[in-house]
Amino acid sequence: MPTFDDLISSLTPDDLLPALRSGYRFTTLTDWQYEKLSGGNYGGVGDRSAERAGVARFTGHGQRADGSPSEWVLVLKVLPISVNAPD
Image (cartoon, rainbow, N blue to C red; front, side, top):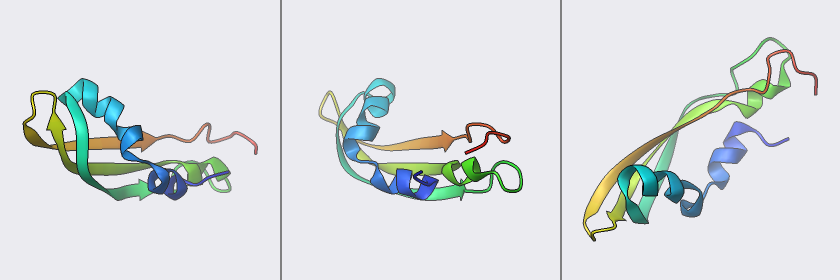
């Protein structure tokens, strides 16, 4: 099962653009980066779903529908399925 690090490192502009299109009215992302704020530390002892959870902040620049450039920020929060769920 992929970890939170696997998830955030595999995201592409195509994954981020839908949220930015509706919130910021972006049509294009020109650059972006992310910072993991936390990850792999949710749930109880021995809970393997914890390594698939975390929080990351994505920032970058893009172009709005009217052609104007702008900065943007998104926060991704992934919660574990259940702290007591068996694998």
